[in-house]
Length: 339
Ligand code: SAM
Ligand code: SF4
Ligand code: SF4
Image 1 (cartoon, rainbow, N blue to C red):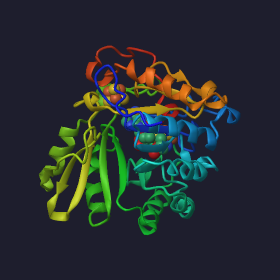
Image 2 (image 1 turned 120 degrees about the horizontal axis):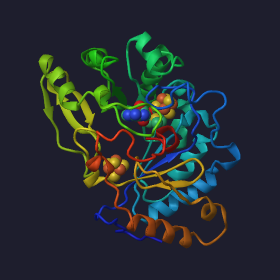
Image 3 (image 1 turned 180 degrees about the vertical axis):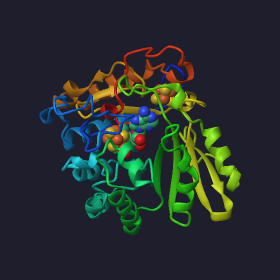
Protein backbone atom coordinates (compact mmCIF):
# COMPACT_ATOMS: atom_id res chain seq x y z
CA UNK A 1 0.00 0.00 0.00
CA UNK A 2 1.83 3.11 -1.21
CA UNK A 3 0.71 6.20 0.68
CA UNK A 4 2.99 9.02 -0.42
CA UNK A 5 2.97 12.40 1.17
CA UNK A 6 2.54 11.82 4.91
CA UNK A 7 3.80 15.02 6.47
CA UNK A 8 4.08 16.26 10.03
CA UNK A 9 2.80 19.47 11.66
CA UNK A 10 5.70 21.40 10.12
CA UNK A 11 5.05 19.89 6.64
CA UNK A 12 8.08 17.61 6.81
CA UNK A 13 7.76 14.27 5.00
CA UNK A 14 9.21 11.06 6.37
CA UNK A 15 12.13 9.85 4.25
CA UNK A 16 14.72 8.23 6.40
CA UNK A 17 14.47 5.53 9.11
CA UNK A 18 17.30 4.82 11.54
CA UNK A 19 16.97 1.37 12.95
CA UNK A 20 18.85 0.62 16.14
CA UNK A 21 19.23 -3.15 16.18
CA UNK A 22 20.93 -3.41 19.59
CA UNK A 23 21.63 -1.08 22.51
CA UNK A 24 24.75 -2.92 23.71
CA UNK A 25 28.23 -1.81 22.70
CA UNK A 26 31.83 -2.98 22.98
CA UNK A 27 32.96 0.66 23.45
CA UNK A 28 32.26 3.07 26.29
CA UNK A 29 32.71 6.44 24.57
CA UNK A 30 32.49 9.01 27.39
CA UNK A 31 30.12 11.23 25.37
CA UNK A 32 27.70 8.37 24.76
CA UNK A 33 27.98 5.50 27.28
CA UNK A 34 30.29 6.59 30.10
CA UNK A 35 31.81 3.48 31.71
CA UNK A 36 30.95 4.54 35.27
CA UNK A 37 27.26 4.42 34.40
CA UNK A 38 27.17 1.60 31.86
CA UNK A 39 29.06 -0.98 33.88
CA UNK A 40 28.37 -4.69 34.42
CA UNK A 41 25.20 -3.99 36.35
CA UNK A 42 23.54 -1.91 33.68
CA UNK A 43 20.41 -3.47 32.26
CA UNK A 44 20.27 -3.31 28.50
CA UNK A 45 17.26 -4.40 26.44
CA UNK A 46 16.84 -8.14 26.91
CA UNK A 47 17.62 -10.21 23.83
CA UNK A 48 14.16 -11.73 23.73
CA UNK A 49 12.76 -8.21 23.32
CA UNK A 50 14.83 -7.43 20.23
CA UNK A 51 12.76 -7.22 17.08
CA UNK A 52 13.55 -10.21 14.87
CA UNK A 53 14.66 -9.79 11.23
CA UNK A 54 11.12 -10.59 10.06
CA UNK A 55 9.61 -8.06 12.44
CA UNK A 56 12.11 -5.45 11.24
CA UNK A 57 11.09 -6.28 7.68
CA UNK A 58 7.44 -5.71 8.56
CA UNK A 59 8.32 -2.39 10.12
CA UNK A 60 10.53 -1.43 7.16
CA UNK A 61 7.68 -2.15 4.74
CA UNK A 62 5.29 -0.04 6.80
CA UNK A 63 7.67 2.94 6.88
CA UNK A 64 8.41 2.51 3.18
CA UNK A 65 4.73 2.76 2.35
CA UNK A 66 4.67 6.12 4.16
CA UNK A 67 7.58 7.56 2.18
CA UNK A 68 10.81 6.18 3.69
CA UNK A 69 13.47 5.55 1.03
CA UNK A 70 16.57 5.10 3.18
CA UNK A 71 17.43 2.94 6.13
CA UNK A 72 20.40 3.32 8.44
CA UNK A 73 21.34 0.39 10.65
CA UNK A 74 22.83 1.55 13.91
CA UNK A 75 22.99 0.82 17.65
CA UNK A 76 24.77 0.42 20.19
CA UNK A 77 27.20 -1.45 18.01
CA UNK A 78 25.20 -3.10 15.21
CA UNK A 79 27.96 -5.56 14.29
CA UNK A 80 27.53 -7.20 17.71
CA UNK A 81 24.25 -8.58 16.46
CA UNK A 82 24.84 -11.88 14.66
CA UNK A 83 21.75 -11.60 12.47
CA UNK A 84 22.52 -8.06 11.28
CA UNK A 85 23.27 -9.44 7.79
CA UNK A 86 19.88 -11.10 7.59
CA UNK A 87 18.23 -7.85 8.73
CA UNK A 88 19.96 -5.89 5.96
CA UNK A 89 19.17 -8.53 3.36
CA UNK A 90 15.47 -8.48 4.26
CA UNK A 91 15.28 -4.67 4.22
CA UNK A 92 17.04 -4.65 0.85
CA UNK A 93 14.26 -6.81 -0.59
CA UNK A 94 11.70 -4.01 -0.09
CA UNK A 95 10.71 -2.36 -3.37
CA UNK A 96 11.52 1.34 -3.55
CA UNK A 97 14.33 1.36 -0.98
CA UNK A 98 17.16 3.38 -2.50
CA UNK A 99 19.85 3.10 0.12
CA UNK A 100 20.85 1.07 3.17
CA UNK A 101 23.72 2.36 5.29
CA UNK A 102 25.40 1.13 8.45
CA UNK A 103 27.05 3.14 11.24
CA UNK A 104 29.68 1.22 13.18
CA UNK A 105 32.58 1.83 15.53
CA UNK A 106 34.62 -0.31 13.14
CA UNK A 107 36.14 -2.81 15.59
CA UNK A 108 34.47 -5.81 13.96
CA UNK A 109 34.23 -4.36 10.48
CA UNK A 110 36.99 -6.29 8.68
CA UNK A 111 35.62 -9.68 9.62
CA UNK A 112 32.04 -8.67 8.67
CA UNK A 113 32.68 -7.19 5.23
CA UNK A 114 32.12 -10.28 3.04
CA UNK A 115 28.72 -10.83 4.61
CA UNK A 116 27.82 -7.14 4.55
CA UNK A 117 28.55 -7.05 0.82
CA UNK A 118 26.47 -10.16 0.20
CA UNK A 119 23.59 -8.76 2.26
CA UNK A 120 23.27 -5.84 -0.19
CA UNK A 121 24.46 -3.05 2.13
CA UNK A 122 25.12 0.13 0.13
CA UNK A 123 27.21 2.34 2.39
CA UNK A 124 29.26 2.34 5.59
CA UNK A 125 29.96 5.12 8.09
CA UNK A 126 32.71 4.50 10.63
CA UNK A 127 33.00 6.53 13.82
CA UNK A 128 36.61 7.54 14.34
CA UNK A 129 37.23 10.27 16.87
CA UNK A 130 41.01 10.32 16.88
CA UNK A 131 44.01 9.15 14.92
CA UNK A 132 46.21 9.38 17.98
CA UNK A 133 46.32 6.00 19.71
CA UNK A 134 46.05 7.33 23.25
CA UNK A 135 43.26 9.76 22.47
CA UNK A 136 41.41 7.09 20.52
CA UNK A 137 41.64 4.78 23.51
CA UNK A 138 40.30 7.54 25.74
CA UNK A 139 37.47 8.46 23.35
CA UNK A 140 36.36 4.83 23.19
CA UNK A 141 36.37 4.44 26.97
CA UNK A 142 39.55 2.35 26.92
CA UNK A 143 38.02 -0.28 24.65
CA UNK A 144 39.02 0.61 21.11
CA UNK A 145 42.03 -0.38 19.02
CA UNK A 146 42.87 2.29 16.45
CA UNK A 147 44.86 -0.06 14.19
CA UNK A 148 41.94 -2.44 13.97
CA UNK A 149 39.45 0.31 13.12
CA UNK A 150 41.75 1.75 10.44
CA UNK A 151 42.15 -1.75 8.99
CA UNK A 152 38.36 -1.94 8.88
CA UNK A 153 38.15 1.35 6.98
CA UNK A 154 40.70 0.31 4.33
CA UNK A 155 39.25 -3.21 4.02
CA UNK A 156 35.82 -1.65 3.48
CA UNK A 157 37.28 0.43 0.65
CA UNK A 158 38.75 -2.77 -0.86
CA UNK A 159 35.32 -4.39 -0.62
CA UNK A 160 33.83 -1.67 -2.82
CA UNK A 161 32.20 0.45 -0.13
CA UNK A 162 34.06 3.66 -1.06
CA UNK A 163 33.59 6.43 -0.24
CA UNK A 164 33.52 5.66 3.46
CA UNK A 165 32.18 8.38 5.72
CA UNK A 166 34.19 8.91 8.89
CA UNK A 167 32.29 10.51 11.77
CA UNK A 168 34.53 12.56 14.04
CA UNK A 169 32.91 14.01 17.17
CA UNK A 170 35.04 16.96 18.23
CA UNK A 171 35.46 17.80 21.91
CA UNK A 172 37.39 20.84 23.03
CA UNK A 173 40.92 20.14 24.30
CA UNK A 174 40.50 16.44 23.61
CA UNK A 175 40.73 16.05 19.83
CA UNK A 176 40.16 19.50 18.33
CA UNK A 177 43.91 19.84 17.78
CA UNK A 178 43.76 16.83 15.41
CA UNK A 179 41.59 18.38 12.69
CA UNK A 180 44.47 19.04 10.27
CA UNK A 181 46.06 15.69 11.11
CA UNK A 182 42.84 13.99 10.04
CA UNK A 183 43.05 15.68 6.65
CA UNK A 184 46.71 14.76 6.22
CA UNK A 185 46.05 11.18 7.28
CA UNK A 186 43.24 10.59 4.77
CA UNK A 187 44.19 12.80 1.84
CA UNK A 188 44.08 10.74 -1.33
CA UNK A 189 41.88 8.07 0.26
CA UNK A 190 38.22 7.68 -0.78
CA UNK A 191 36.82 8.85 2.55
CA UNK A 192 34.60 11.76 3.55
CA UNK A 193 35.47 13.24 6.93
CA UNK A 194 32.47 14.56 8.84
CA UNK A 195 33.18 16.73 11.81
CA UNK A 196 30.34 16.57 14.34
CA UNK A 197 29.61 19.08 17.05
CA UNK A 198 29.43 17.41 20.43
CA UNK A 199 25.71 17.23 21.21
CA UNK A 200 23.60 17.33 24.34
CA UNK A 201 21.92 14.02 23.59
CA UNK A 202 20.77 11.97 26.56
CA UNK A 203 21.19 12.98 30.19
CA UNK A 204 24.19 11.04 31.34
CA UNK A 205 27.24 12.34 29.46
CA UNK A 206 27.52 15.54 31.55
CA UNK A 207 27.35 17.61 28.37
CA UNK A 208 28.62 21.10 28.78
CA UNK A 209 28.43 23.81 26.15
CA UNK A 210 32.01 24.87 26.88
CA UNK A 211 33.25 21.55 25.44
CA UNK A 212 31.64 22.16 22.05
CA UNK A 213 33.85 23.29 19.18
CA UNK A 214 31.65 24.85 16.52
CA UNK A 215 31.87 23.88 12.87
CA UNK A 216 32.92 27.45 12.07
CA UNK A 217 35.97 27.15 14.30
CA UNK A 218 36.89 23.83 12.70
CA UNK A 219 36.42 25.25 9.20
CA UNK A 220 38.57 28.29 10.08
CA UNK A 221 41.30 25.95 11.29
CA UNK A 222 41.14 23.99 8.04
CA UNK A 223 41.16 27.16 5.96
CA UNK A 224 44.42 28.27 7.55
CA UNK A 225 46.11 25.46 5.64
CA UNK A 226 43.68 24.57 2.85
CA UNK A 227 40.86 26.22 0.97
CA UNK A 228 37.56 24.51 1.56
CA UNK A 229 34.83 25.50 -0.90
CA UNK A 230 31.13 24.98 -0.06
CA UNK A 231 29.27 22.38 -2.12
CA UNK A 232 25.58 22.06 -2.87
CA UNK A 233 23.65 19.59 -0.73
CA UNK A 234 23.12 16.21 -2.35
CA UNK A 235 19.43 16.33 -1.39
CA UNK A 236 16.98 18.35 0.71
CA UNK A 237 17.42 17.51 4.38
CA UNK A 238 21.06 16.40 4.15
CA UNK A 239 22.41 16.67 7.67
CA UNK A 240 26.00 17.61 6.84
CA UNK A 241 27.06 20.81 5.09
CA UNK A 242 29.53 19.70 2.46
CA UNK A 243 32.81 21.30 1.41
CA UNK A 244 35.50 20.39 -1.07
CA UNK A 245 39.21 20.90 -0.51
CA UNK A 246 40.00 21.26 -4.20
CA UNK A 247 43.79 20.98 -3.97
CA UNK A 248 43.51 17.41 -2.75
CA UNK A 249 40.02 16.66 -4.12
CA UNK A 250 38.77 15.81 -0.65
CA UNK A 251 35.18 16.20 0.47
CA UNK A 252 34.56 17.08 4.11
CA UNK A 253 31.33 17.74 5.99
CA UNK A 254 30.10 19.42 9.14
CA UNK A 255 27.19 18.39 11.32
CA UNK A 256 26.29 21.46 13.31
CA UNK A 257 23.39 20.49 15.51
CA UNK A 258 24.45 23.05 18.14
CA UNK A 259 25.52 26.07 16.10
CA UNK A 260 23.31 25.67 13.03
CA UNK A 261 20.32 23.39 13.68
CA UNK A 262 18.58 21.75 10.76
CA UNK A 263 15.17 20.81 12.18
CA UNK A 264 13.33 22.52 9.33
CA UNK A 265 14.35 19.76 6.94
CA UNK A 266 14.41 16.87 9.39
CA UNK A 267 12.87 13.84 7.68
CA UNK A 268 14.26 11.23 10.03
CA UNK A 269 12.45 8.72 12.17
CA UNK A 270 14.12 6.41 14.66
CA UNK A 271 13.30 3.01 16.05
CA UNK A 272 14.90 1.20 18.98
CA UNK A 273 15.89 -2.47 19.11
CA UNK A 274 12.71 -3.27 21.05
CA UNK A 275 10.40 -1.40 18.69
CA UNK A 276 9.98 2.07 20.17
CA UNK A 277 9.45 4.81 17.65
CA UNK A 278 11.01 8.25 18.23
CA UNK A 279 10.24 11.29 16.13
CA UNK A 280 13.30 13.26 17.35
CA UNK A 281 16.82 12.47 18.54
CA UNK A 282 16.11 14.52 21.64
CA UNK A 283 12.69 13.11 22.40
CA UNK A 284 11.88 12.03 25.92
CA UNK A 285 9.18 9.58 24.96
CA UNK A 286 9.02 6.79 22.43
CA UNK A 287 5.87 5.26 20.99
CA UNK A 288 5.84 1.54 21.52
CA UNK A 289 5.16 -0.25 18.23
CA UNK A 290 6.26 -3.68 19.47
CA UNK A 291 2.72 -4.88 20.15
CA UNK A 292 1.52 -4.06 16.65
CA UNK A 293 4.68 -5.37 15.00
CA UNK A 294 4.61 -8.66 16.86
CA UNK A 295 0.88 -9.31 16.54
CA UNK A 296 -0.58 -10.70 13.36
CA UNK A 297 -2.98 -7.82 12.82
CA UNK A 298 -3.15 -6.51 9.28
CA UNK A 299 -0.07 -4.44 8.32
CA UNK A 300 -2.49 -1.60 7.54
CA UNK A 301 -3.10 -1.05 11.23
CA UNK A 302 0.62 -0.61 11.87
CA UNK A 303 0.86 1.79 8.92
CA UNK A 304 -2.11 3.84 10.11
CA UNK A 305 -0.67 4.08 13.59
CA UNK A 306 2.77 5.25 12.40
CA UNK A 307 1.09 7.67 10.01
CA UNK A 308 -0.95 9.27 12.79
CA UNK A 309 2.15 9.60 15.00
CA UNK A 310 4.11 11.26 12.18
CA UNK A 311 1.24 13.61 11.38
CA UNK A 312 1.23 14.78 15.01
CA UNK A 313 4.99 15.40 15.06
CA UNK A 314 6.16 18.94 15.81
CA UNK A 315 9.68 18.33 17.18
CA UNK A 316 12.35 20.97 16.64
CA UNK A 317 14.50 20.57 19.74
CA UNK A 318 17.80 21.84 18.29
CA UNK A 319 16.21 25.06 17.10
CA UNK A 320 14.71 25.79 20.50
CA UNK A 321 17.29 24.44 22.96
CA UNK A 322 18.33 26.78 25.71
CA UNK A 323 21.91 25.99 26.66
CA UNK A 324 21.53 27.87 29.93
CA UNK A 325 19.13 25.25 31.23
CA UNK A 326 21.32 22.31 32.13
CA UNK A 327 18.99 19.38 31.56
CA UNK A 328 15.80 20.79 30.08
CA UNK A 329 14.00 17.48 29.67
CA UNK A 330 14.60 13.83 30.31
CA UNK A 331 15.92 12.63 26.96
CA UNK A 332 16.46 9.18 25.59
CA UNK A 333 20.13 8.11 25.47
CA UNK A 334 21.98 8.07 22.13
CA UNK A 335 23.18 4.45 22.28
CA UNK A 336 19.57 3.41 22.85
CA UNK A 337 18.25 5.23 19.82
CA UNK A 338 21.32 5.01 17.62
CA UNK A 339 22.14 8.60 16.63
N1 SAM B 1 28.24 2.39 17.73
C1 SAM B 1 28.13 2.91 16.43
C2 SAM B 1 29.13 4.02 16.21
O1 SAM B 1 29.64 4.57 17.17
O2 SAM B 1 29.36 4.33 15.05
C3 SAM B 1 26.74 3.37 16.07
C4 SAM B 1 25.94 4.08 17.12
S1 SAM B 1 26.56 5.65 17.67
C5 SAM B 1 25.38 6.10 18.89
C6 SAM B 1 26.16 6.69 16.28
C7 SAM B 1 26.92 7.99 16.19
O3 SAM B 1 26.51 8.83 17.24
C8 SAM B 1 28.41 7.87 16.30
O4 SAM B 1 29.04 8.41 15.16
C9 SAM B 1 28.75 8.66 17.53
O5 SAM B 1 29.99 9.31 17.45
C10 SAM B 1 27.61 9.64 17.58
N2 SAM B 1 27.40 10.21 18.93
C11 SAM B 1 27.14 9.57 20.08
N3 SAM B 1 27.00 10.44 21.10
C12 SAM B 1 27.18 11.68 20.58
C13 SAM B 1 27.17 13.01 21.10
N4 SAM B 1 26.95 13.25 22.39
N5 SAM B 1 27.39 14.04 20.27
C14 SAM B 1 27.62 13.83 18.95
N6 SAM B 1 27.63 12.60 18.38
C15 SAM B 1 27.44 11.55 19.18
FE1 SF4 C 1 29.21 2.62 21.38
FE2 SF4 C 1 28.83 4.13 19.26
FE3 SF4 C 1 28.07 4.99 21.68
FE4 SF4 C 1 30.65 4.81 21.17
S1 SF4 C 1 29.18 6.15 20.13
S2 SF4 C 1 29.62 4.05 23.01
S3 SF4 C 1 30.74 3.08 19.82
S4 SF4 C 1 27.22 3.28 20.59
FE1 SF4 D 1 15.38 16.39 13.81
FE2 SF4 D 1 14.94 16.60 16.42
FE3 SF4 D 1 17.43 16.83 15.45
FE4 SF4 D 1 15.63 18.77 15.04
S1 SF4 D 1 16.45 18.12 16.99
S2 SF4 D 1 17.06 17.88 13.51
S3 SF4 D 1 13.75 17.56 14.82
S4 SF4 D 1 16.12 15.01 15.35
